[in-house]
Length: 176
Image: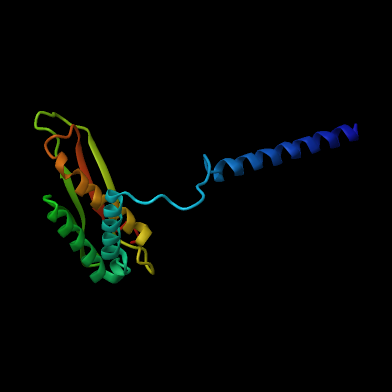
């Protein structure tokens, strides 16, 4: 009887260990095979895109920019607005005050065809402030750069898209 209970307990422990291993493998495993060797060369369009993304990230997220570094936050917002305007967009603002400082969400809209009634709306966004102590290149300068480049690539869809596309760059994802 004792031997049977010990065998049952051992079986349960083994099942729990197997389940834990399976859960760990499932949550950390990468599908497919990892790449090895040199990366293939970039196509011309990919190279142009990489240069543009780098330029945007450097302009927005090379320095800490948040309410503690308000001047840098304002520079980032002005860069975003000027870049979107240079693509021909009417740049929208949702302004409000935080700690007596004016801040704003920034957006552009790509309107659908004129005959589209009650269109679906696709929203793509990223926050342009950085966490205290960080320039925010990946939180979220790279996201902002991607939205800006998406705006450039989609600008010709105005008036011909089937959906309204709203590109939003918002402030204060980070505290406060």
